[in-house]
Length: 326
Image (cartoon, rainbow, N blue to C red; front, top):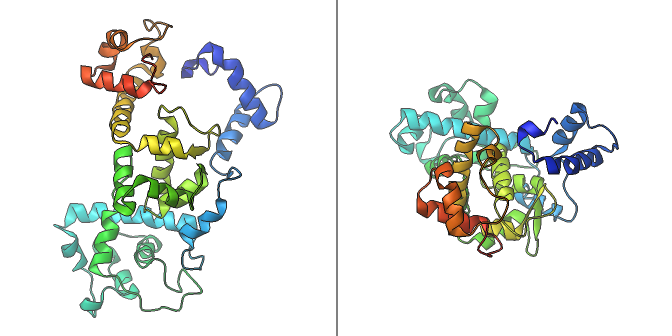
């Protein structure tokens, strides 16, 4: 009964209950405590067989551990904050860079000079501000890596501008695809980076987070993109809800799929704002039988509030088996 207001079809309730009970190790009632326990575990258990050893290649490329994942993620969050401040208060990156008090401008910004300039850029959290410097020099300083012997690493204008450019949010398939192509030129090459090596067909959420962090994508944005890619219409999704298959990833990055899924997400967001559970928008009139393109157009065009071309694009996107029916 609790799941019905959330839009779950009645026919699915028993199956969902069995899955929840199995996950919690119970055979009878599923309590709120049970549900919270299951949700808290999501994303923390790495599924077996996903080349988990590849994680060290992403964060430990130089043979030293450096700061933790959380510290690196906090640095990315701080860089995004810095980027917003600079966009609002400076004409360009060069103008902002020249606000730093540098003893040797031609050599770049030293750590002490960076720390002294914190208030110039609206920061009050010294640790967050200093973590940006660490990210810019790839954490090559004894402050973050006890094995590092380099004390005089400095930040050039190029380092500064590059970090600010890659601090732009990645919140859609299109922006993720652009980031991957800028770094790897082709999407298959990007998958090898994500998986850690050749020949991997699925990656877990933890591996995804680490691979995205190496591309300057924060954990929250990476999680959102993982959920979007897991939800796209595809015939070859992983059976594990916490894993993304290579086939689903490659399908999602194709040009037509990016546009179609962005349109689908926009439509679903509008429907959820209007109806609550999206299924309510179709419960009273959508037939049980499969629909051909013209029939689909007749039934959903007004509800979706889309142009005819967009509706036909969505039909093709949803018809994953290419049978001509949805």
